[in-house]
Image (cartoon, rainbow, N blue to C red; front, side, top):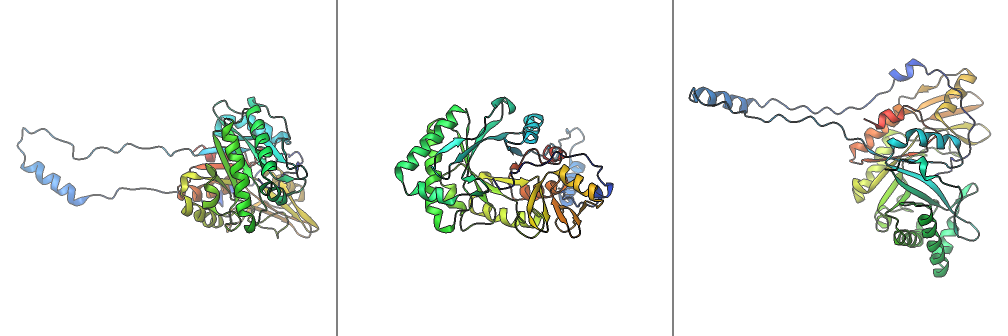
Length: 368
């Protein structure tokens, strides 16, 4: 679901500055019932006029307290990264959906293949286990593959059939289609491929088909158009700043509220999965950014002798070594702020991209 997939170095734990925990602004919603003075006065008057032998009848029924509902949590794995596997095993019971398979559309043959062996026992037996179907190969997505498949009935039929076989053999419950980098002119072609893959997967027992779409690209990935072919849309609420852009936060609460709000307004909250980032980037002055885990960011800051502090405008962690590099990093407190924006729009399904890079405290945020 993005290009931030290069293996990262093992991280060393570094003490977190106490000031970071105190500088985050969290959002709370308190609902209080105003006193109903007029109703109370009527009840007092009625009680005074009633016979002395009359039984006292409660005028109100106590409202039961309701605990906050835990969101349905999806976890995307990187099957080539041992840290991702470790996080999946450690947090399997916290995940409702796990995306553990990696099915790639070959850029030459256009045929799908499962690139990594996938052990079903890593996931909780109660979780819905899915496979990602992507046109990403090498260092980029390949939109020409989708165009070629859409233009060739036989090739599309063979690809869809092979995809369904992989899903059935791997005992996946469905697929997540991730076909990024398509242009607005490709929309009808992309929809044709997505629909063929969805129908074929369902025909071999797949019960769930989702599609990952860029949060802000509503022309290349119109919400209603693709919703007609799948069960759920996964809105990728990350890379507000990306590996080849200028340095900046991966996702800010304001940007998440605006981009997700537009999608929700078009198809409703119940059919949306909000995918949130748990990674960061380190931008160097002479090269594209490198994906960072939470521990990578703390380690780099500690080794450089600079502070990893919270940027109050974006609520992201930020560190800079002048003349060398700049880091913007997601963590549990940013996730808390993003989660508040998501739930305020009525969305109750949250996805994490990707497991193994997260601040371990994100699990306590999602458990509330």
